[in-house]
Image (cartoon, rainbow, N blue to C red; front, side, top):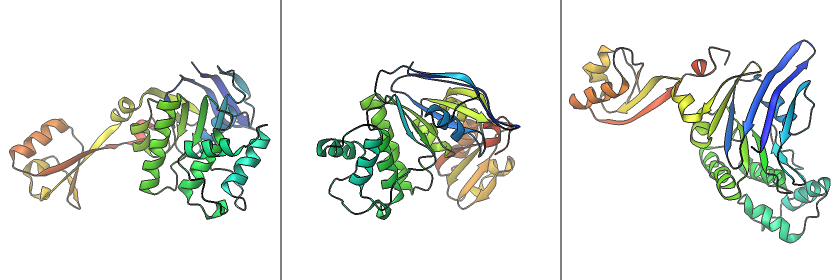
Length: 285
């Protein structure tokens, strides 16, 4: 086990932000932390990074490195008037590290950024800023990193690119990665284990796909002329833009799809729709 945070609690006055939160992370695995706004995700990450102190509980990181854990909280804290080299140099100095040209090149290549670009960082896209922030987080080779909402604001291509980079860091570098996100699909595809944080408490933990699939109550069926289907009409499907939304009750989704095939309907996709209220145990979204 590379990181264990046990019974972490944090309050601000009478407001309990975290209540006996425990997470356990193993080397080279990707963990997801999902929860509504105000659930306590960012507070937990700040505690893990040592930016604030928990009221009670313990944190153990099994690492002999100079920097056991790194990360990005909320958004990369970059100096917009400096170049990528300038930013890495400043943060390397803060961490007691000399930024050589070789280290700069390695850091940029590791996150898929070019060393040829010399303009100021304020000109970078959000995706490039996220990558540069990740390069800074990876200085001094931490064995664990936390990423707070890394996909927020990215376009679809940016999400895919960052998704692949995170998987590469985990599989090839054996870095443990803990991600918070409200984009459920990204956590399903990316994380090995998911923690559900609701109003400061961990209410669910388990394999990501298993937890999310258990929270599916509706399916989006895509195809042509679905509104003509007697099967879908009989189960009160809702039709919209060549799609039908169904909530199986009397028959399973497999049975519904089989009946559609027998009916001669052309189905091109069936997409599970995660019910966030079910996922969050009926809590606030």
